[in-house]
Length: 379
Image (cartoon, rainbow, N blue to C red; front, side, top):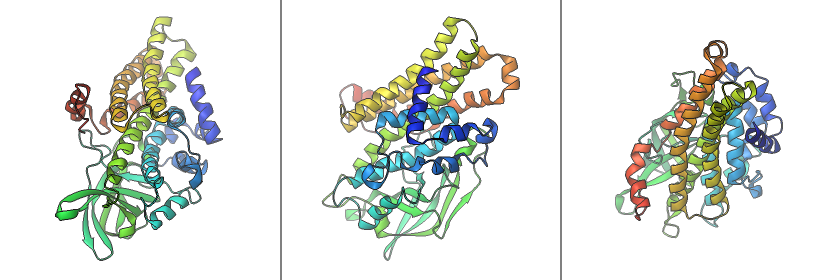
């Protein structure tokens, strides 16, 4: 399919040989729990896609990033879903690194090591809880001498077995004792951090979305990012960048899975031209919405509130369009194909989990209505 080939070309430019290496693995093995796919992502330079050039990365812009995600989603929906958590985390951390004095020396040193050491970052935010704010802390933080002691669990947590770093949202005492949001950077080999089976479905199994438990995990002060008197908007900036990037990247991966299925329909000339066109229109419109948001973000056409509103609209519209595209694709491919080609039903099933990622449509309805009626976007 022409647009999917274009996305593949972008992916090949940043990660030469990755798509070919993934394609060499049978699809069912590629998407299985013990898949080597995430290892291939790391070995082909996937970690550095959004890392700025001054930190040793590729510095891909938002348009290129969503195209790479689409190509990955077509090859392996699990990889696209899993690595969204890495890219989403990278987008937040390096956005803060652009301002002088916004990160501690130890934090900057870590960011400079990310590409040379191929540090894959998992996200301990609210992934998988469909009606919860993506930034609601899931880990308790107790102040202790020199830092914080963390307790809690993140489930599911994508990249659980392949990560080198966990970024966890925590609540820390602010001025006056009231809790405020902060971000802890936790090495995957920290004493007290453990990974446990959680994912109970074959769909997206290779994303390694397991349970990560933290039991009295110590994190030093210089590995916690929080607001300061001279930078009171630091965590607000973190949240805004995170929402925008997360929604663009997670949605783009799912558009790839739907496009891969549409590509089979076109290649086999299933159904009439009007039916095939309906599949293409649904699949292409979903990605066009996301690519439009990515272009506006890249070109600075939107402030952060406008960008968050637009990307949420694009994501929710994409949910509906991708469901139509995948369901019609399966129908046109027919019952015998459904029986004999498991990968096609797996691709269709891999499209649906987009509805479960936070923030859910119901939880943002009032905020979006208020925003488009002229008020602030209060997520």
